[in-house]
Length: 261
Image (tube, rainbow, N blue to C red; front, top):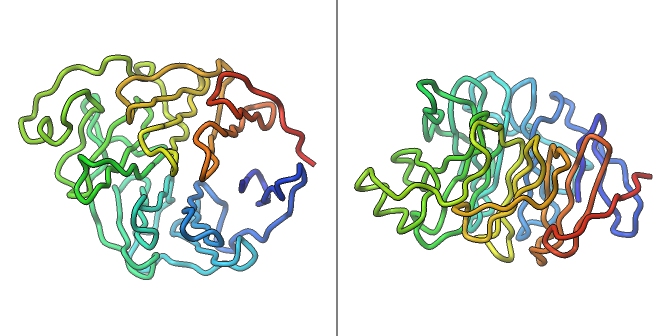
């Protein structure tokens, strides 16, 4: 687990923490990793642009060629393509790189919600059969959750039924048990070992979906800022709260506080 909280540090797996170098270009607003590239960390920076480390966070290289000069508020790695990155740029939209950030192309305008464009507050690439090439990009916003397939044709609500049919027709059933209406999604992650399992961090707590975001259940009422899932165990979850780190090894049924050395 990697934690950016003033400084950048990584858990050693035994309860201790190893301090890492932070990118020189600016403070970190978002982090992304991929289980197929265990040493790679991608960081979205408050000063604008993206930094990438290939050695677990000891050395960093700026990867911002072509990106607008604005904060990267959220970043994710394509679920089935670890060299493809997606970055949400404040005030601009969604950008895509297929060469690990060496070059970037504009992919999609910001989601249009409640009569205005909204900056994503979190991004997650979700490997689902209904996506274009198996990829959906889910975005948390200040008003809730939305998503777009990798064709970048249109943002849509997360709805039951065949998602691509709904995208084409423009109509779909209403969500069955969505996240709390109007509440910001502060963090969002899909389990690499079980892609339809999603966890979201909201001010109201930690929420889980087992069906790619159609039905959500609250797993903790503790306000959460970020959440991470073990790469091979979808039941092993760690979250950052206002008081520190909490961990669940049973899918959120029970939580314990983790010591931060």
